[in-house]
Length: 200
Length: 398
Image 1 (cartoon, helix red, strand yellow):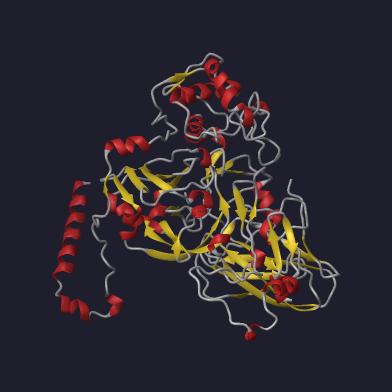
Image 2 (spheres, rainbow over the protein chains, first blue to last red; image 1 turned 30 degrees about the horizontal axis):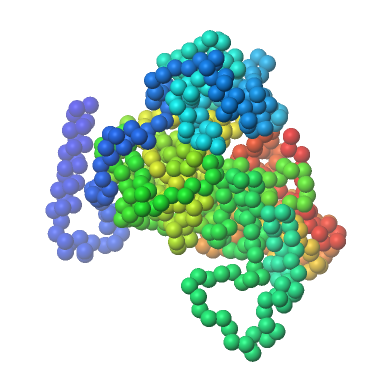
């Protein structure tokens, strides 16, 4: 590996020398077909460095491995009143009624019939492949009448409530940065990357 | 025939046929050569008789009135809308884009900074992957209802590759997260290769600043990929070695397949075509008809558009309007003599990769049915009846 790296360095150095070493007049006389493509310019010095505080203020995403989950914890018991007050109006009393997205429900045998029956709702328990997404999405976008307004504790409690409603965790489960990424989602293994447009 | 079709306007409440003579008479003098015309003015307007409208579909989307347009560029105020938290109002003076994560130099760029970078302008379509309105079961739908969510603009901005070079993206980076500054803080994970292919941070649309509905003051633009991934009002890019599995790329914008899987990160918009004339609610009179429409492909240039006037039994290659641009709406035209009687008019697009727009049967064999129907691009038909009226040939989808 070291030798290969050295060779690459030497080739790069030789290329740099030769391009800089050619007199300008000779370059301008070179036939157009042989002109080398414009070299990538170095950084242009536009913009300014971001401070750690600036990054921390915006960097709220949560990854599938739980990276980015904040400190705190939640339970379904504490989530139920928050759900009733902030969510039930759009998602129904138990998360099954709508009128907006149906959040709660499992398929018999955790089947995946979504291409067979268009009426099957894509609930958290039947279609969402990652539990971490529930936290990330609620925190960034819910509720629509006051988006991006819930505290981390409120979000943890709501996530716990929705996971319990979907029978994905026990009634008394404590949801936090450690437990949430470990929740097994029935839909997880059904998702496959698209291969259209990739080289054959 | 062409004149009368210009007067057929589709409004939010449905299709309204304006009486051309009456509307003109109310506005214009009997002889414009006898009256001094209007003075110059700071901002131009459409002729008062031309009233193309987007059709609002709830509060979160509105569609382009293809039946009222010609050529390939979509006027910016008729570009379709789709948003998940409303259209934000963003002060361009305080706007900034943060780029961080797996980079050598995390940086902040103001709008002025973005405009200082070397710029590029390219014509591309933008299409929402949920752009098939042909499942209503109704024949009385316009092109605007059948394919509301595709539009075509000249986009100006800075290549994302230029910005990635500025911040020094690390070698192990594979994905980046794009986040909007809207009330949905909409996020999508994008493969890093797209940044080095043709992605833009766009701030211009058809020669002026991007419209608020399209991402003012700046948006990500990913040519040929589903609209949702071209995150509008972009405020942050986080470079990473893995996708983030956001709601928009897991529970939404994924495609249940007939084999029991769900296709994920299905960015590519496959080739499709749309006949915009003749179409509902036009009524034909016997004689020559120039069938025309638009075709586009996320894979590159449109190579050919075939037109059939006999329900798909025979096909003829239509004329393509030059220049045919990559990942852009392409106008096709085919002259046809309608002598009366029933006819089913269809088009099918073929792109430069050889991909041919599928039939409904082919599509359903692979995709099954789906409640949302992302990436539905089937060949469709307009049925000309014996009396010259034209309706959409509705088919069973569930």
